[in-house]
Every structure is written in C-alpha cells, then in structure tokens.
Image (cartoon, rainbow, N blue to C red; front, side, top):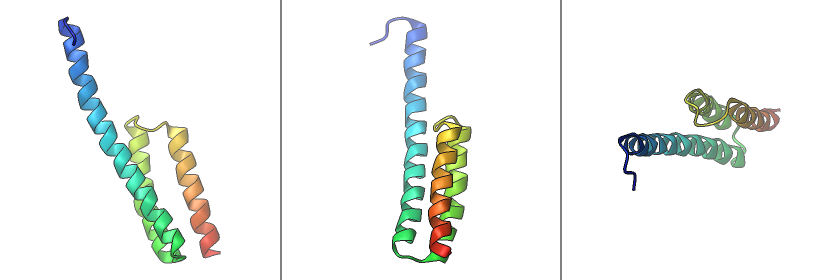
Length: 88
C-alpha cells in the first residue's frame, strides 16, 4: 500500500481511470459484437445500422485515450469492409 500522499493520490487516480477505461472497453466490445452478430445473420441493413452505432462508440474510446487512434481506425475499417462486402 502507498505511504506517501502523492502515491496515495496516484493510486486513487489509477483506480478511477481503470474503472472508466474498463467501462469504455466493454462498450466497444459490445458494439463490435452487435455488428458481428448482424453479419452472421447476413442481414445487410441490420449490419449497417449496428455499424453506425458502433463507430461513434469506438471513436469516443479513441478520443478518451482508451484505444489508440490507429487501433480504433483499424477496427472501424475492418468492420466497415465486412459490412460492405455483405451488402455487395
């Protein structure tokens, strides 16, 4: 356990950030799962709708620093490519 005041403060900050980051990561995973489930059902409109809901969630996580911006971009790009090939 931390003894110095600064170390105690950092421990509290780390706990707060960890819980916030975990919540963001959970939202991202859920959004991606919804797109993948729509892709499995081969429903192009549902997949497109799920993608439109997932993109802002992933972008927000990247903006908050939970995901690296290139990682977020890669996730969005790959999902969009799969949705596009389903609709084509």
